[in-house]
Length: 171
Image 1 (cartoon, helix red, strand yellow):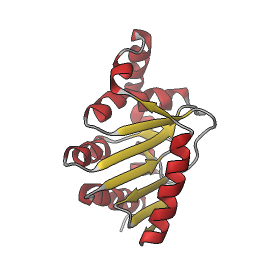
Image 2 (cartoon, helix red, strand yellow):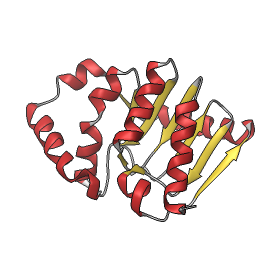
Image 3 (cartoon, one colour):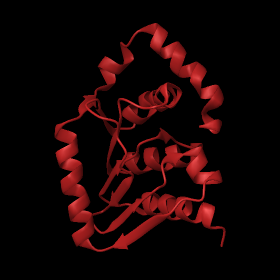
């Protein structure tokens, strides 16, 4: 098995099979089309999908690319929260309170295709419950992105975000 792609395949399978809830923290969120579609499809079939993403980063370009995906995700019913107080380093996913991932993979092209990432997949309610508790705590410190307000952001922001998409596969 190609270990570089193993984690991404398992994460996509878990998202695609989620029945109730997906919660995710990712320090870099530059989803592949496959990853983005899996999240949107989950939300459209009634799964509660919540993402905590950075509002600050060491890469302005990655934040712009991340934000360029928000409208599609918000329109699908996905809840997005940004952490502005500190740089977000967590990389965790919890699915349906029983399947969890903690590791080095970001939700981005490099982690999905290039980097040799290390992720631990844990089956069991105890770990998922701990991740969900941490997620709830982080969510209280985060700013919720609301669709209508997002659509009203400055035109210059929209242009920056759209332009940044041209390099998203490099991030």
